[in-house]
Length: 222
Figure (tube, rainbow, N blue to C red):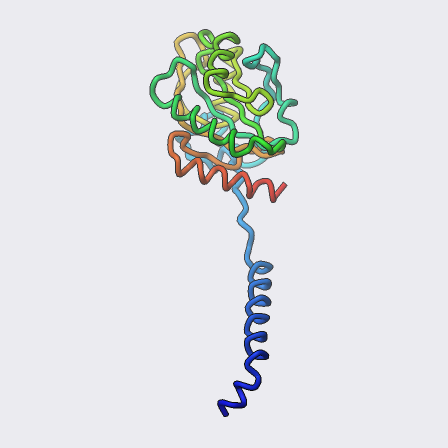
């Protein structure tokens, strides 16, 4: 009996290897692909959603906008057409969470530097302080790639409206007047249809790694 199996040793080894390959192929075909959720106001933690939009259960997208970047160029939704992008809200004089967030944005920029499908967008929440010149100086200090990453300033009411009602990045009272102030560590992942596909703690390295992984999932979906 032993001599019989020894005689067909090569056959059994080949059969085993082929079987493993076939099983692996079937597993990869049948294994469901991970799909990122689409965040609608009614399905997001109510602590993050403006009361006026909590009832919306579908078709929520990032609103049109018109702001100015670190080079004095007007940036609108058209600059992000057919792009996946990561958005956040910061200010250049922040000494707490913003430096960590910006360093993590730099990390994302580095990881995606050769990927034309992915961009970054950082909104100043103190536009009265963050002039074009201030943003330019900050961008140069942090190594911002102008073709990949826009730091934007402009009308405070518009920026705060975007933060609260488009990105659902923070829920606080206020109307964007001179006394209004928002401060959030959230990063938002936006798809090519201007839908929110992920929320991440911009100060947490583990969340940044998850964000990079989710970008790849989103790219495969697009």
